Image 1: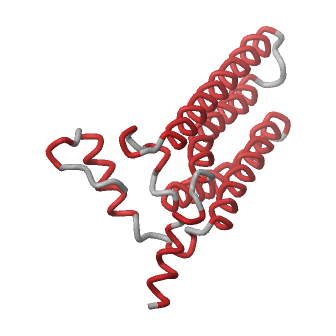
Image 2: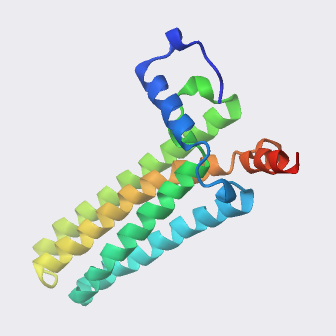
Length: 183
C-alpha cells in the first residue's frame, strides 16, 4: 500500500487505508497465487451451482431451499478472495499502477456488461413468460429473481477475480510472511 500524506486523503481513501490496515494480516496462508486461483475457481463453482438451482427451481420448486447454504458459501468465498487481495477491486485510483488501473477498469466494464445482459434476459423472460403463461407465475418469478441475484454476485466476482491475477509473484504478500519466518 502506498503511504500518502494523511491531509491529502479523501474520505474514501481514508476508509480504504483503514480497511487495508485491518485486513492486511488476515488469512496469511491463503495469500499465495495457488490459493487465490482456488478462491476464484470456488467463486465460479458457487455461481454455477446457484445457476443450476435457480433454473431447477422452475421445474421442481423445493430445490430452492438449497439457495440458503449456497448463498452462505459464495459470500464466505467472495469475502475470503477480497481479503487476500487486500480489497484491490475497490482501490482508489491513486493506489494502483497503470496496469492494475487498466485491469480494474476493464473488469468493471465487463461486470457492468454482464449485469446489464442478465437484466435484459430476465426482463425478456419475464415479459414473454408471463404473456405465454409459462408454468406457475411464482416459479418463473422466483427463478428469474434467482438469476438476478446471481447476476449481482457475478458482477462482484469479476473485478475481484481480475485483480487477484494482477499480483506479481515477487510482490506476493505470502512471500513476505515466509521471509519473516526464515529470519
